[in-house]
Amino acid sequence: MSNTEQEDERPNLEVPDHLEYSDEHVWVDASVEPAAVGITEYAANQLGDLVFVDLPEVGTRVEAGDEIVELESSKAVEPLVSPVAGTIRYVNHEAADDPGIINGDPYGEGWILKIELDDDEPDLLSAEEYAAILRRL
Image (tube, rainbow, N blue to C red):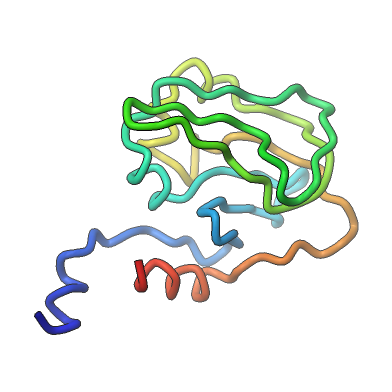
C-alpha cells in the first residue's frame, strides 16, 4: 500500500493553528487568560464516547506532568496530563454534566479547564509539529 493510500484512510483530524499541543494529545489556548485546556480531536476519537469526567477543584495548583483530570469512556479510563504549570481558575461543569460535549466539540464547548499559567514558557508543540506526530500514528 502506498503512503498516499494510507493517508486517505486516516480521518481528517482538525488541528487548529492558534492552539499549542502536548504529545499526550492535550491542547492549550494561551491566547486567552486564563489559558483554556482540553483534549484533541485525536484523543477524543481514541477514547470513544466519554461517560464521566472527574474535574479538579478550582484553585488547585498543578505542575506540568501532573495527572489533573480523569476521563472515563466505555473503552477506558485515561488521565489528562497537564502540559503546563499554574493554578486552575475554572472547570467546565457543562462537560462534566454532559461529557459528550468533549467528543462533539473538543476545541470549543468541550474545553475542560482554564488555568492561570506560571510565568515559565511551557514546552508545547505548534499545530504543524502536532500534525506531524498524528501523521506518524
